Each structure stands twice: as structure tokens, then as C-alpha cells.
Image 1 (tube, helix red, strand yellow):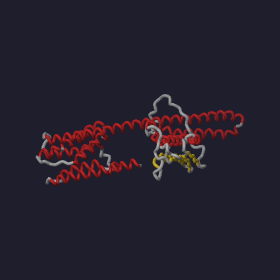
Image 2 (cartoon, helix red, strand yellow):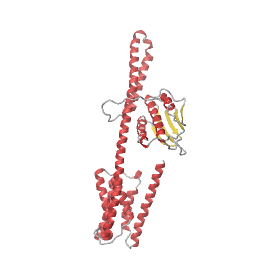
Image 3 (cartoon, helix red, strand yellow):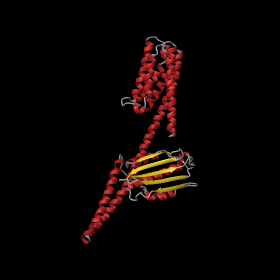
Image 4 (cartoon, one colour):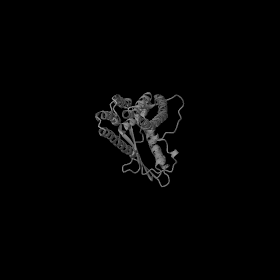
Length: 386
């Protein structure tokens, strides 16, 4: 929340500076006695492309269209000024807009289009001094072009670096999700194997009872039906997320459940720490296996993050609630962000990504963020329990 607020503040400052620079462009044009409408039109097109809210952009307003059209309008204005031999001034507002669009082109346009759109924006920026000097051959014009080249290089390099980071994070998130799907597959294998074994044992019992006590077969057959129904229901809820799974062995790992939370919380507390497990009496013991396993993983990841990022926490609370239709798992701490771990042990920030994948696959929801009041952190997962 704090980082989002900082980003919003920085964006507001940037928008204000861009608008102020654009007004300065118009003032310069008025001071030298030229018609203000041509530069106003160029600035209006550029500002619309830069400042149009992301949530309200129509589908046809693609990044390549946003970046190419204002650059084309700027180039046409420059060409018209040169053709009419008019020494039209250029100002910082249009240059800032073109640099912003260059950033958008390099970072967000498709790879091949990024080169073309970025070249258009850079070309429009570097050609703008020709309006005032009549060409780019004079020493003054070349000086402006040199400064423009430096700015273009800095902005393009920054955008390319952020684009590379975006790509690496996308790949990392995809890997985390794939690993989580493999973990779900292992859980599903254990659960189905458990019920299939039960079905086998009860079937053998039923075969023996056909000769000795056929009147008592109904409870045995009901147990077989229940076990088969539970296994099929779990398969329907989880197998949908097992996509692109390569062939080969999957590493098996022990899976926790709600009963295992007692041992998990009791063994977690460090010096001067208190971990409290509060489980409502309404929480049933026979919740679906995949829900219990996911709830255990939520608590495990939340406690791990406390150790990584809030080692100064003195009280950690794990709360389980059930209202008859949903299981709610909440983990809260009162830490302020202090940690004794080195930076390399803090993790890559993908644990919650994997948990979100697992919780969503079960039809639930995962939320994580600062607690009300600003002190400590809260992780909350809600699972439907059919």
C-alpha cells in the first residue's frame, strides 16, 4: 500500500510537470508572435497518448498506435515549418512527451514494432530543432541534436532494462506456477491413492460378506460410494490446473493438514515470540484433503515470511474459522519489518504467487497486505468447503 501510494504521488508529480512544460511551449510560441494552434494540436495529441488512463483505453488504442501517431504528427509539423521557411520555436513540453512515448514504445510495444515506433519517436525529437534553425546543419542545431541523442539513449536503455526485468519476472512466475501445479499433482496422487485403497479393502470385505452376512452390506457399499465420490470430486477440482506437465517422476513431499498446524505453530516461535493457534469449534475435521493441504501451506508460507521479513514480531496469530460454507485462514503478526536474515535469504517474492495459484484453483481467494492501523502484516485465505 505504501509503495502504491508513492507510485501514485510520483505519477501525479510527473503529470503536473508534463502539463507545465506543455504550457511553457505555448507561451514561447505566443511570445515570438506565431499562431498557437499548430503546436497546441501537436501537444494535445501527444498528451492524450501519454496521459490516457490505462483502465479506460479502448482496445484499438495499442501501444504502437499511441507512440507512432504523435511522432508522425510532430514530424509533419517539422516538415511543414521547414517547407514554409518559418522559424518555429520548439519547447520542453513536446520533447518530454516524445521521450515518454519513446519509453512506452521500447518497454510495451511488440518486439518488432518497438524498434519502429521507438525510431519514430526518437526521429521526431531529434528533428524538432530543424523547425527553428531551418535545418540541422548549423552548430546550434547540432548541439541540440547531441543533447537529444544523449536523452534518447538514456530513456531507451532504462526502458529496455525494465522490459528485460518484466520478462524475467514473467518467466519466474510461470516456473513457480508450474512447480505449484506439480505439488498439487502430488497431493492429488496421495489423496486418490488413499481412497482407492479404502475402496479396495471395502470391496474385498463386501465380497466376503455376500456369503456370510449379506444383510449388512449396505453400510459397506455406502462407504465405497462415499470414498469414490470424494476422490472424483477432488480430481475435478484440482486436475484442471495441471497443464503442461512434463512426463517423468515428480518429487514427492509430505503434505500437511489442519491437524498438523499444531505442531507447525508450536515449533515456530523464536526468542521473545508467541504464536497462538485459534481454531473455532465449528471447523470440521473432515474437510476435503486438498483444502486442508492448501490451508496448511498458507500458514506455512505466512510463518516463513514472518521469519524472513518481520523477525521482530512478538505475537503471531493463526486463526481458523468456518461458517458452514467457507473455511477462513488468517495469519497476522505485529512486526515492523525488522529481520536478522541476510538479503539473500529473503526469497524472491514468489511464494505468495504459488499459494494464490493453489487457492484460486480450489475456488478460493488469497489476500495479503498490511494490517489495519499500519502495524504488522496479514495473510487471509478463504476456501469454499462443498
